[in-house]
Image (cartoon, rainbow, N blue to C red):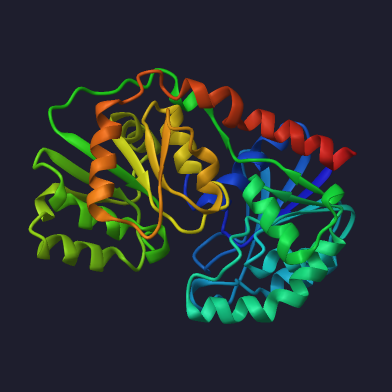
Length: 357
């Protein structure tokens, strides 16, 4: 099959957020058996054409107000001239998914990665403008794919989609990356956060909880974003700056080791369609605490992953962190692997069935 993947990112190896990881992992596995092209958007510093691990990548100039929506006239013109067996667009809240309907194709798949809200007043206003076009895009799709039951429910509620044209295919994990990963012994205890530093992600609550924990607790924050200077400033105000470490751009091997070494992984995000970092923390054997609501609730089993309600109570959060670390599950997330966390190869097999069906 000739398959086109369309999304807003520049397609970088081992970099980017959740959608970039998703597109990269399915594209490179599909490319072992099919002719796979990716259309993405990128700043001028990126090559226009490139072949990455068997995937033909074309990047287009973009306009991205407030780092969102990623409109590209060049991509639109290229799509109008394209002809593929399958066109698979990603990311409801960016325009490349909607532009992908202009390509000639036998089958059109839409993976929405949908949160239902914009994460700023500007993005929220644009979401309203996009709504009518978004409805048309999803109605044109032969199959609309959600990464969780929560996302599927949200799509059905807001767009009244036919349930028979919907599917749930979650994100995957490359289990080969975790083979031989061993937790290092350490005297001090650590909380790990990995993700974009936006207010809705909740990293600020981890800064606030640190004074409530004993001095042998440290916090490691891996990521970048507009909240970072505020988090650093607040840590200094609270007198805990020496107990908080910030990282970004870590090599993959170092990041996986941090997953394994942490006493507890915490994600207090209000809006998630799935959360790859929770899957990776669990596969690394680290218990998790998540904010209930959105798709994060689906992870809660009170054995490997524990929930906490909004509005957050900081003393209660501190208590929960202590409790989870004391009962750290030594099974390595075994109870969740078989049922909830699939290998990327299995994810690709599910897509191939949809593409060829």
